Length: 187
Image (cartoon, rainbow, N blue to C red; front, side, top):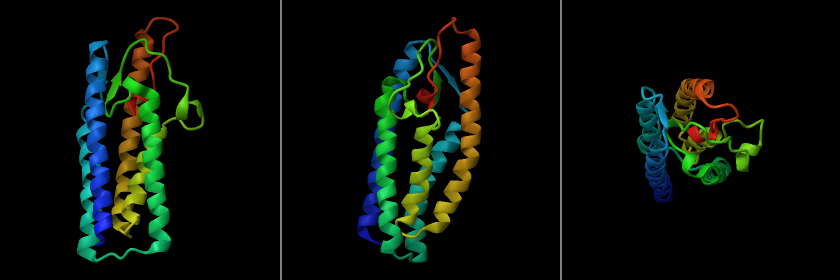
């Protein structure tokens, strides 16, 4: 395994830890404003899947002696960087409304700037996750990890998006007229 690939995976892990710091701070802010948490049952599975992705990237390359194939690896590296850029664009755009958990704060307006102005792209943060989850293992040809993560993440996103939509629907049913919750704040 290339030392630089191990470093890349470690850097992605550090980025994920930074996300958790931001998410915890934002969760405190949201809960202090009456935020409602939903989807607690699927959240540990999401944490396990994302942790497993990072571990599996290293293990598959190491145990199966996967080569670095430049014609695949470099484009996948660019996609990993692009996914990071999109993720942090989402986080910056949503500010305190961004979280890794499903937390809906009553009365917050819908964010319609940044990547959320693209009406055809309802969940841009999840696009970043999907791209990263496929591309990071493929940087070093860990195709089993890429396929496994993609399939498991797709199943988890069905649950996650349904949870978010339900939480938003319940809140809008009891919210004052004219107020809407931020869909993207849940990503």
